[in-house]
Length: 320
Image 1 (cartoon, helix red, strand yellow):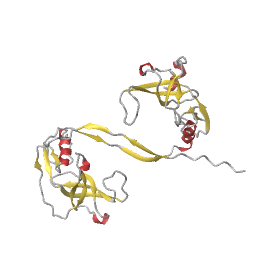
Image 2 (cartoon, rainbow, N blue to C red):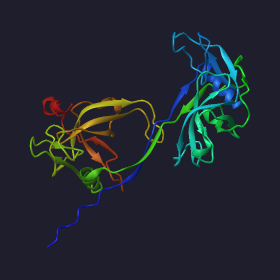
Image 3 (cartoon, rainbow, N blue to C red):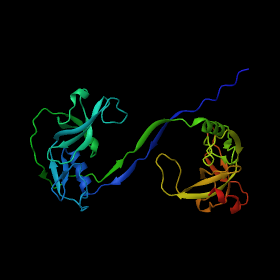
Image 4 (cartoon, rainbow, N blue to C red):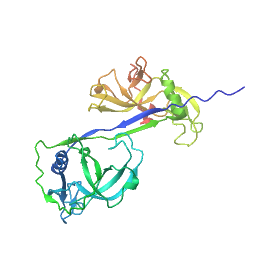
């Protein structure tokens, strides 16, 4: 008699993305607008150094800096590292070097991509120039990359610049994104598969006997493996909650709405879920709720009140 093969552990691509909009002060606005116009601006600090990219406060004295200067689109590589396998959304889709380039007239270096045929073609001290993007919008990507430049160093000094341009850039969207393949492991694979059957399954610690939902594979208190699966809920109790007033991108839920920690019956750990079926200002600690499943959904869409009397505080205070 042979043992049944272990269930397949789930794997799926996962994207974590945090784009946010930020406003620009006069220095950063001038710098990015200048890139759109093929002009590279820096700032002169109190001790006479020229910093590119520019900063708004002197790193030595912390005083505000407003003296803008223009530097050359040519410069010198101060250090570099070869990138033989570019990732999606990087400046170039062929192998390139990440390089720190000190532009002529600047005292600090700017980090960007250097387009070169191979690592043997890159050296510290080599001369390079900016390759401008064909379409420029007022972003660091207006510099498509750097490319080798055989010209001798021109010795160009920074020149004063008023930083005034037509239609200045006043804000940007800062992208923060992480793409990776996620595997939830044995315990959470069983948890996710059970949710697809409209069941909630946790795991019990063999030492302290606490039931964790979602399961973690090991007890965080005792440090021992949790293999005893326990079905909990489906109803539970709201322990704490928050009212969301800012609409999330790509989330089709009207604000305000409520997210809560819910201690399912039989569980010793509260899980996170949205509350629906009740006005947001009537959600409260101790509210008894149950899951609402959508057709074909692999997890509860939200939790709604069961109509039962509120749970006594002493029944859930240890789970807050």
